[in-house]
Image (cartoon, rainbow, N blue to C red; front, side, top):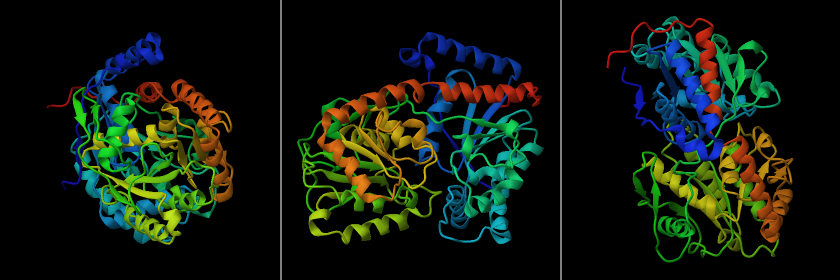
Amino acid sequence: MGTLVEVELRPESVERFSTITGRDAIQALQELSARIRAEAPGRIVWNVNSTAVGGGVAEMLRPLLSYARGLGIDARWVVIGGSPEFFRITKRLHNALHGELGDGSPLGDAERRIYEAKIHENAQDLLALVRPGDAVILHDPQTAGLVHGLHAAGAMIIWRCHIGADDRNEQTALGWRFLEPYVTAADVCVFSRAAYAPELLDPDRVVVIQPWIDPFSAKNQDLDPDTVRGILVHVGVITGEAGPTSFVRSDGSPGRVDRCADVVRLGPPPRADTPLVVQVSRWDDLKDPIGVMHGFGELGPATCGAHLLLVGPNVHAVADDPDGARVFEEVVTAFRALPHHARSMVHLVCLPTRDVEENAAIVNAIQRHAAVVVQKSLREGFGLTVTEAMWKARPIVASAVGGIVDQIDDGVHGLLLRDPRDHPAFARAVERLLCDRPFAEALGAAARRRARERFVGLRSLVEYAAVIERGVAAGAPPRAAARDQ
């Protein structure tokens, strides 16, 4: 059918983590991967999702699978194809699992037929690749329908759900009712939080694996202040003298930021010494970008002339998110409705995505330059932008929703909003960090320590390997011979 695209991956050595995790952790992971290779020679571990660009899933997969390949595991990544109607349905499912109405469209028999027709097309391509004994990790609702066909082919199936809601409501029930025929057939279901797993799943087949970040990626590697400023001046985020825009690519080769951002603003960019309040996310209603603008508008006068940056991808770059362009247009409309003075302090930044690592380097520079990083999500699966800011020792204001509360203790690693729709509370929290810099810096330092201990390193790789090893022990048939190349 020609709907699948395989993403190229380069092996990366886990030895670079020795300075973070120590040698014992490296050795334990190497021994675990050696057991997996010995117990199931020739096994391929497939990861299947719906986009190679944009969003936390794609960003996690690339380094995770590269390190797996560096350990001798034959890990591969394929991206399914989909029509606009298919992605509209999966976006509706995405919102439903968050407990939100989304566009309010039905999830009935007609939608199931559209969903399964596109799944069938992708399954035909995938079944030409997957052999008995392979392990297949399917990510999120877009891929759930593939479970039965791949099971019939003799593969071990792990369904990885990166989203969810702590509380059940009519919408979550609707979403899980749609997905139930598929996900209940998976060998293992992996969630970011235990509370996200629905009651319809066998608890013995549910595993919790928290997301992680790669500290050596273009998005999280150290950048010196001159490079941070150089990148931001070049892309048009701040004014100043041109400087270096270089970074290190995942293969160790030098990279350079060449493209510029598309920015909606009134007047010139802020100066380099202007404090920036920054939210980085997709253009998504659940990230509440309009609410961030309105909350920022309630800041008091003693905030050193801070400006707000709402940062997201080019709205046409993320194939599986049909709402991005609509949400961005609504944000622009709300921006234009702001008073003149408020508009002069708000910047809507769309980043280039043609080069994934260039995009990541720009985000890295923006986060490192931020005086305060905010994530005022209404719902959040985990919130990797929070993790990234923690790693960079930035002071954070974030909503007490989803996986964010697993990362931040209020008043210790950042400030949490009990009600993300409380704009005055948001403004007070941001203003506190802008005005009390010693307190802000102490929160940032504590956040960095927490990220280093819990969210940076090889933990997820170890946990996924353990899940696969458990599947091998349970009797998933190893392939008798390696795949012909």
